[in-house]
Length: 473
Image 1 (tube, rainbow, N blue to C red):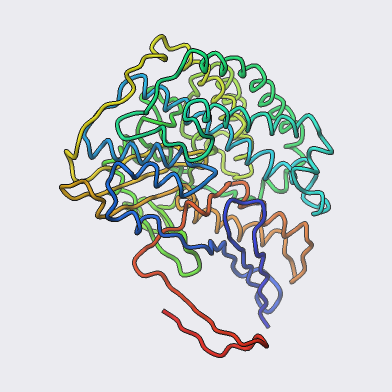
Image 2 (tube, rainbow, N blue to C red; image 1 turned 135 degrees about the vertical axis):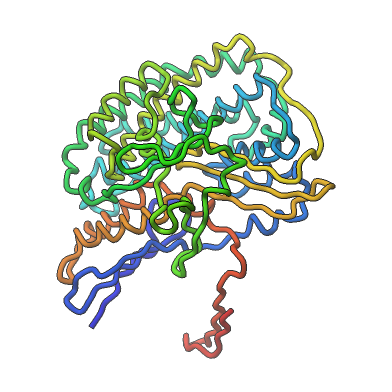
């Protein structure tokens, strides 16, 4: 007889998902899937709204990464307006994006993954959480809280609110940075540097003890996608996309938001509400790839800041070519967090950073526009079509979780085959299968959007729990 193991819900993720592991009659893992089970229709219910409302509307997709959607949406709107935003507005947006990245990476590393890394995959589930980390390593618990506070407070100083700020608008931002807020951010930098360096040191001390997990946490050759500058340094807000193959060779370069839909497609599988993104010339699933911190560091030649460049050089020593194990997403996140702090400091030294000219205005000059950035979890693309009055007629969002969907499913299968044998498993084994997904840090709320007619099952049960009627669409 066959058997199915279900992990529902997958814990310490943003959003709702489950894992199913299918065993054959001998108790060996035959297949495994990661299911994103929630459905949200942001693309569909944005139709009919004025395009200039889109950034604030799209920010409501997620309370973890609203800044990412703000920026990608605003850039898509600016393509419709055919306008270039002022220099200072672009710099302030970069700082906002860096603050978002630092606080999000801190959430992922300290709150979601460090319980596994610091307390152990087999540790007591009651203690395997951020409170257990704070009890075992108070210094790291405080560092995690401090880094999140650093990023969120910068967002608040720039945009007046930590979550769902309306400060980013098509054409730039609504308000310039004040000298007082600049100085307040500068005063926060020493603590932020100390916290991220503490995390890097702690991670390096324990990484070697996870050699078995490194081998089976979505560890396979793949393609990698991310934004890059002309000098081949890392980029989060501007630049163009580069896609490399498993050897590091460039497959496609210079992908702007206007070309995104020409080369990137989305497939659908019947076990998940999140689509599976792929590179069209290679087809699906051969054209699947990974995005996020690990791919970004695989793609770039430099970080562009001195301390992060030293960490990048050390990171690249993990392999001769692209680093394949998704366990190393944790390390890559901390390198990027250090870069984020350095980049914020560099932006604040711009002599024009307090300039009052922070917004350009224009109307509808094109009927279609796309915007792309690097969100903490990976590449994010917004694509809109409007009518002559500027009302949205069609919208599509391609988020990091969709880009990584195929890799996450392959990773779940790989780890399940390593830890489930002869139909037997331990709670620690199943926690390791979950931890594969946590390494990618997916945002499931961001990833689920209407695609044609979504399947729907409505079941009616009586007081005894018996099914009395069912409607299937």
